[in-house]
Amino acid sequence: GLGGIGALDEAQRATPHLYAGMSLWPIDPLASAALFREGLRRAEQLGIGWALPVYLQALVSATFDSGDWDACITHYDTARVLLLDMGDLDELSMEALVGVARFFRNELPATRDSLARMLASMARPQARIGGEIYVRWLEALVAAHDGHRRDAAELLIGAGEVCEAVDV
Image (cartoon, rainbow, N blue to C red; front, side, top):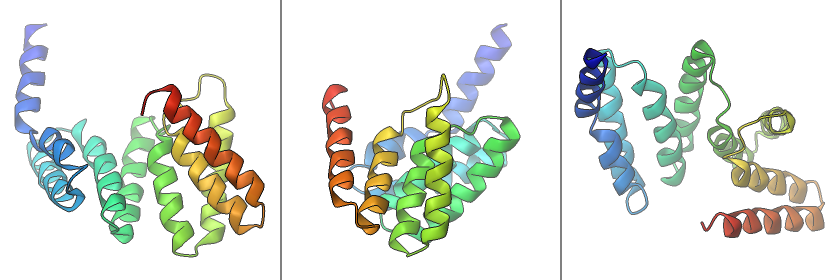
C-alpha cells in the first residue's frame, strides 16, 4: 500500500551516499569509496537491509578502481555472505574484479577456482551475464599466464565486441 511507498522514499532519502558515490566514481574512486562507506554505515544504523549488499558491491568496484585490493576482497567476502543469505548471488562482475585482484596478488589457485565457478554460472540457462566483460578479462589474464596468448587475445577482442554491441 501507500505505507510501502513512503517507506521506500524514506529509505532512498536516508541513503543519498549511493547516488553521490556513483557520480564521483569515474573521476575519484577514493572519494566514491568514502561515500559508499558512509552510506553503508548509515544503512546499518537505520536498519535498511536491502542497501547493505548494494553498498558493498559498490565498494568492491570503487576499491578495485582505487587499487585498494585488500579492501576490495574484504568487501566482496562480506557482500557474498549477505547475498548468500538473501539467495541472490549471481553478480559476476563483483567476483570477476576480485578474481583480477587475486590474479595480480599471485593467488592463482583462488583465481582459478573463482573463474571456474563464474564460467559454470554463466553456462546455466537464464544466467545473469552482466559481468561478462570482467569475466572475459580475468579469463584472458589466466590464459596468457598459462601461455595461451592467442586465446587470451581472442577473449579480449570478444569482450571488446560485447562493449561495442552495448555501446560502452
